Length: 167
Image (cartoon, rainbow, N blue to C red; front, side, top):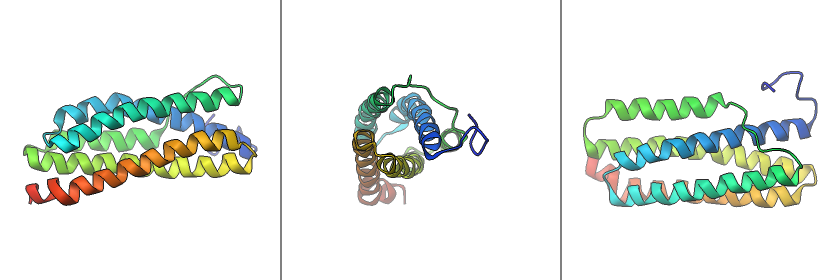
């Protein structure tokens, strides 16, 4: 199912597409986090990435639960947006030679991912609610809350530590 194609005829179709998009995205993020953990030299940042990797595994599990509630096999639909965000992060990491600047770049790359996820989860929560699927909305809202918390932690690490050290 391609985005904005004739395959999407209802809010439910759009909701399913969004779930598949986010399922794909979360799985790609899980694959990308170990490289970010390895590159991070700031201990707080490294620990935050490690914690978020475990959270992401839990988020994928919740997405599987949503698919189960909808009587559908968990399936990812290729997401060009997350691929572009992750590629930009990888490209940036390959261009930075200074470890302090690397930590700043890692925060920026991670926040780009978090902001994408926050918008997608927020939308899916709204759609699930509109579709009368409070069971799905509740699970998706837990993921949304974790993404918002991760973004806030990244901001705190940037402002209190890594940005200053790189300056």
